[in-house]
Image (cartoon, rainbow, N blue to C red):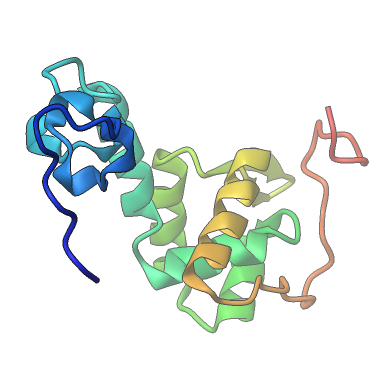
Length: 160
């Protein structure tokens, strides 16, 4: 690629015809400015929101937690269902579920003597599907070892 010729004084070519790298920073759209040339302003995400988002991403940073969430895409499951489906120890599954609960990615409800775990809401499913797509991995098919259950107090249709 040949370098662009510098504009001469009195040249009639408008600045927008030059490649962005040859334009003065004041003539560039903000999206084309290097970060150091952007005007000082408020960050696009405040610190508290960034911390919450980072905590959510941290909860997704362990393969076993991603596998648990993938199992829950098929519907609520008990710890024993998850243990069987994933071949993990019950204590490990319980520990990972606690991390996921603290990040508001899963919720638990009692069903008799068992606790059933489910994705907190449809946003978690959307987030997982987007992550699988972004990583270029196939969307998981939740294990069929246990039939999907409806949490107590939840409509059978799954919608509001």
